Image (cartoon, rainbow, N blue to C red; front, side, top):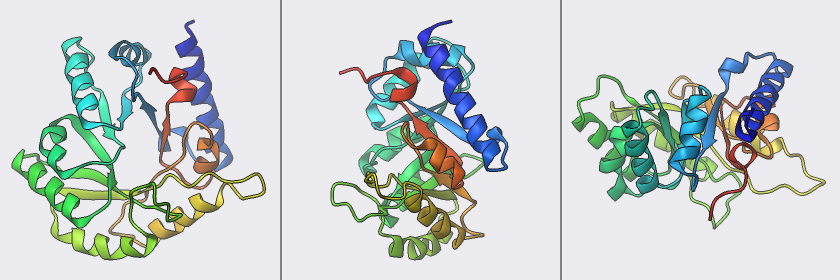
Length: 231
């Protein structure tokens, strides 16, 4: 068994147990393997283990890997875009992606909707609104109070399906409740039903079990899966 397979199986087991403790099936949690800066070889190795959901932060890197993995015959990969997305990258990116987890403005939502419908797709694209829960200047995302107004405006965009909300909380101190920001995101999302479909994209290598306990449907794991990022 390779190191990658050992880590992968360990993470899948941790997800299974975290979901079970919350009274959920592990199938209710999508593991997005964050392949940012990882090689196509690493993605292919995980694909060969049966994994299909991968998250990328940069449009050009995602497109290059998608082309290379397709050339290698790695069919069925579901690419999730999880980084900040510029409107001028939308047209090139859309044909390759399963979902976008980082919509943070009406302008971006409108561009995605326009370009997606231009592709003639029979179904809307799944998107998550990115929320800047802690008002960090270094992060993009909507203030919590701006989420509901944007959701209402997105009702006019038939090419998009609002899967839910995404957030990366600020690091918590040793005396702070790690789960608290995840609860806030869950409560914010629940107030958007039925326009939002219950998705919660939250939790990373260091806290995904806590996020699952608070309802995460999509977790992103990179370092704990692939090892340290390549430079």
